[in-house]
View 1 (cartoon, rainbow, N blue to C red):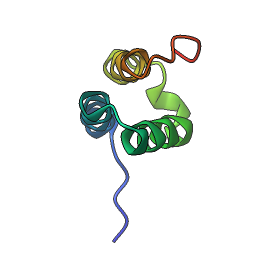
View 2: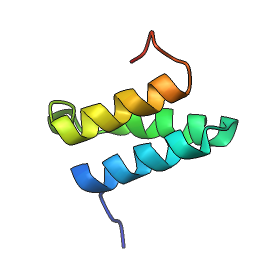
View 3: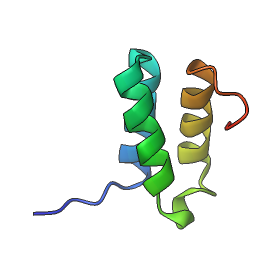
View 4: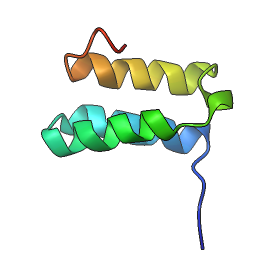
Length: 63
């Protein structure tokens, strides 16, 4: 069974990666962001969580 994450699941995952803030979390978070469906990129909940995650990683350029 393949489960596609929705905007709320992605938000939780981005926040979890931000809290962990280690190399593995950074890799997973950036992979999730790269694979995130285009229609979620304009949703406030996912974009805010993704920006927060990138800022906690110190990656202001990507944010």
